[in-house]
Amino acid sequence: MANRKTERIETLAEALAERRVLHVKDAAALLGVSEMTVRRDVADYPQRFAFLGGHVMPAPDVEGEQPYELARATDAHASAKRAACRHAVRHIRDGDTVFLDCGSTLIHLIDLIPEDMNLTVVCYAMNVGERLARKPNVKMIMLGGLYHRETASFSGSPGLEVLDHLGINIAFLSAAGVDFGRGASCMHFHEVPVKQKVIALAQRRFLVADKSKFGIQKPAFFAELRAFDALITENGETGASRGPAVRKI
Image 1: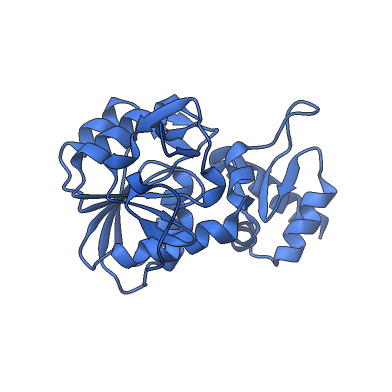
Image 2: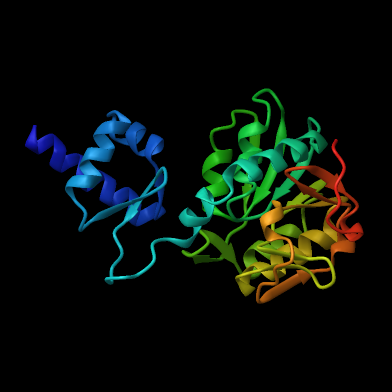
């Protein structure tokens, strides 16, 4: 029994060294045990692992250090994010080439894509790619480059060059801040070139953000709201430049 547990702990540690964060359900599948067993193992090794919501991650290296940023964001306003994605997914049609932005909002849209829908999906974040890999009829294109742990995303010329060769029918962008005067912004400057290039190339562009982002400006501005065909929130969608009043769809 002790040997099996030791093997599980080492396997989990190796997986987290590579992926940084795992949902408890995925950790249980990887280890071939129940979610309860995963929770017990994590609780027995607080010096190696930590829980945040439904996710397992390495324990903070320094006392007082905040754990992995993306995992915190994933649990915040999750029901509103999923509701916004229920509106967004209605725009996708079989055969589309779709771009999905990084972050914690659009992973809910992936879960809502019908299993029998054939799509090509372009992304540049590991958490998005991991969800897409579970969809049997999705052809995934992952943009590469320099890996950023804080957002589990990639940046740099390799990914931007790939975009030049793709015909994107529909792009879903996320934002950490939506200001109806200034526009859409995010926390990390390395995301800006990808977002801006996709906005310029895609046939249709939608900003998907729950209303907790309204009135907020983050450091990295990437687009005026008029750059989008619509703003989609948990309440529905509106022409992006018209302000926070939304209509149901």
